[in-house]
Image (cartoon, rainbow, N blue to C red; front, side, top):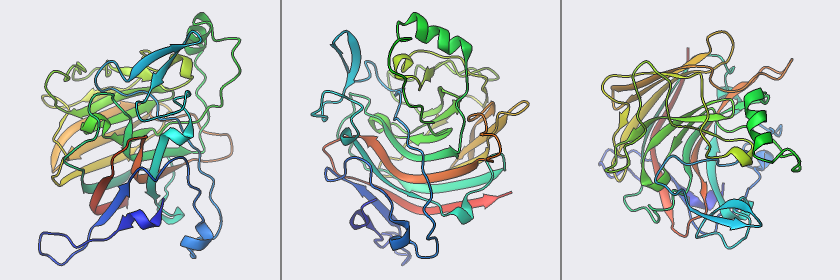
Length: 323
């Protein structure tokens, strides 16, 4: 991140405490390499970090304008001046991640609690621009080979296309597309929306207790992005997996995270402001890389499609407790 856009103002509650404020603005584009030796002298060994495409959005349709160029449908971001919507210059990233001390084995149960708030005004609420505000990565990860997925790609006429570089998406992500707080979980290359803030005319995800989430979309390869996929995930909730807003108000989300694909898989339990929201069970994440045990890597901040607004995420508290 650009350290000039990280600040620690006093909390306006009069307690004398401070909060962390991570800001993203139009000066932030593309990737920024972390100079670990310069900014964290206690951890001088460079640490590899797998990138990932932002993938599909679950908000309003159409999800950005679809422009047919050369017969290939492409998503068009109104703030991206380049022909290729995947151009890294059309992405903004301003994130902090935990040091190695707090990166736990992938299948270990870890509680993450985040108390935060988001801006009241959102610069674009109509194009479903993708905006990740917290994410959990599995590193290293191995691509999940899915014969059915390969067949769909073949039938889509993509078999002779140059091979794409696979980059694993976060197995768990807290998102803010269109200013709507929501959470997604990944079963291999199949991303599912598992909880969301309720919004008039767009609460259509159709969750059923004890069943798989119905709204799941491929994240890889790009030829399948936004197409429906089927996951092994099962949702358990009371009433509906509804979140309350984070717009200009403090909210606390607690995640009890135990990912994994072996056997019956893993689980994620989501609680907001002390109220149970949803439990997700099933094959969460990706296959392990042989002889390289993966870890959970947590990041918080902004990772989004480029926008022309300056926005800040205020963070009051982050708690990480390994069980």
